[in-house]
Image (cartoon, rainbow, N blue to C red):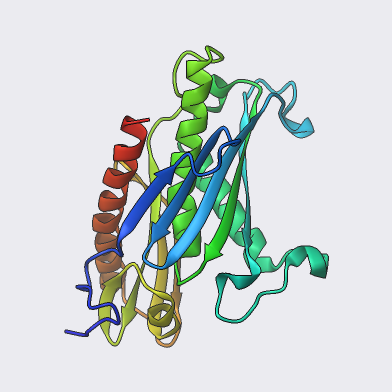
Length: 242
């Protein structure tokens, strides 16, 4: 069995911690720490919807933005605001976060409101998109619970929870929740987004070096599901004690 850098078993997620209320002024906020990866996620509610959604009778909208601070990685990353253009990776991740959350939101029950999710990576060691999704669910829940507390809506308009984790084949062995070094050396790399009830939202799978079989895909999904169950349990501890 391959030995990991942090000595974890291959089927164990990194130490996971949620710190709710991390930013005072946000409607919902959390700092998520997955190993050395740290992401601040804020949710802000606006009493309006995008122009293209007005008058459609479809209710509200949830969207996301993602960014990485210059010192989040070993080499300083130039701010995209300085470059004047978002990187393709940034656009991809923020769309992923938005899609993941919308899959579990009852937009009609949300009403004519937009929830903005801001994911800011302050330290990166692999899995930043997965941490963003998992943290975004908590921030969203807290923001919606606040709307209930303020009597703007009757109940929290969520059908399920959602979380994400990475898996891969490293050194010929399936591994859960890859760190940056493991991700860089993976033969297969996959991000799995799944609801708390076990339904798939999205798979992002790539054969980095060699193709992989359907059997391997199923093994990786099973491994990811076990990890997401752990993440969902940690999310529930935060949301249940809000």
